[in-house]
Amino acid sequence: MTQILALYDRAARLADRQSDWLLPSLARLVFAGVLAGYFWASAATKLDGPFSPTAGAHAQIFPRVFEAVGYDQSQLGLFHWLVAVAGAWAEIALPLLILLGLLTRFAALGMAGFVLVQSLTDIFGHGVETGAWFDRASDALILDQRALWMLLLVVLALKGAGPLSVDRLLAKATVRLPA
Image (cartoon, rainbow, N blue to C red; front, side, top):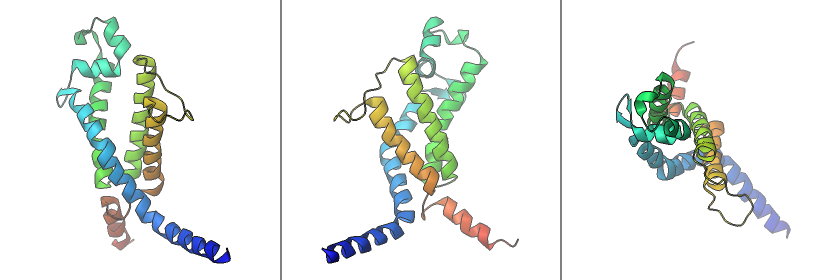
């Protein structure tokens, strides 16, 4: 039994030494495979041009307000335009920053805020059921799915981008600069 515990201890120490580079690298890889395309596809439904939000953008972001004005975009103000355009650009820029590993912690925090607002809009604006935790089903759109997204983003916010990133290149270049 002592040998098994010693083997386990050695394996655990090896895993601890690898986690600083492996965990953020895998988090970015999973983000690339699972979320980047999702957010870019979502952004594509929100813009007709760089600064022209679609009716779909307003329907997604302000569902109740947009319904109240009879789905007439001209009835919405500067605030609605600004939020729709900024939200769409955030869905483009923040995933790109994460994939490049550039300002990764900032981008991950931005994405976490985005997912929080998205989830609240889904719940209170669109009436999406949150589902339940600890119910043996892992398909709840809000609580289960978004909790995993947030965990992924928290890993990136806390650990950074990992060794294969622009952040790492910039950190090395900064160290070489004279003080």
